[in-house]
Image 1 (cartoon, rainbow, N blue to C red):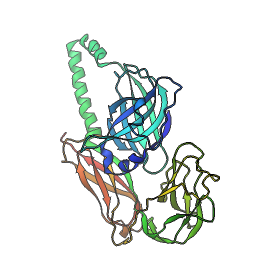
Image 2 (tube, one colour):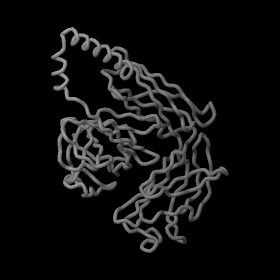
Image 3 (spheres, rainbow, N blue to C red):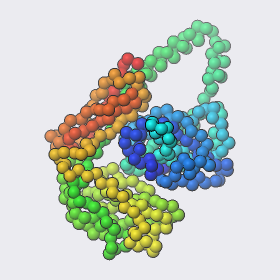
Length: 381
């Protein structure tokens, strides 16, 4: 069963850069009664949700799935027992300098009571851009190690030895298939603003935004955009909670750039260029706040005034390993699958900042939407 969730305000910056490798734990929140509601939003913290906290556990691994979505595997221990009705789960970032814990994502999930002897794994998907995250809970009943030992001890010693040898061979085979060779695919976006393209609140149309002229780059090309008065409408927030909308540029079928706002608590589409984040307070409507006086604009533009000659922040993506390695003595193969722009714009694609649990893939050219297939090899495990 799938449900959707969003990163917290504190978690967006952590999950969208190399700090995500320190997201080491997940937590479960629950209530005493199945009908009780766990109230949370993008501003929630571990402190504000302390009354609902059921337990904290280790994340087994994190990776980008086939669709490029950041995924965490969160196994619930089979011997964990709790009578509360668990209805939400969150991801926890641990600061390596002081051990402080930060709630970076939270999501609702199907309610259940966890009893000892039945395991389960939460597959927590957190998009940094695109649709809302998806949590999938898989029920995984299995016999305990103690029960298995009783059965094996009743068998003939030769059978036990054969099982041990088979298990060892299978372990080495699985190590080769999973740890010694790890592969995946990522997409590196290279787009931003050369000048202008600022957003201001309209003074002539209710709940509207106005774009000033400027120059942007995306898809390996430089484009000019002109003033667009009253071009995007900020959605109303008729709830009692603060919500967020994002202002983004996109190209229509006629090749013209348009400006829009996302629905509340939705992220911009992948094939767009994010400009601003709009904080829409509770009960902000056409009647109560027609000219957005109570709404705040946060500038998210990536400014690169010297593109294509020089990039202040060259694009890269961090690739976490599905399985950690024992040292840095591994090889990396990179294969460019596709990109937008001319061949001379691709530049050089290379790996950097290698660690035992991941590395960066960098592009130093001006091409956009660079899809890279990577393979890491480490045979001396």
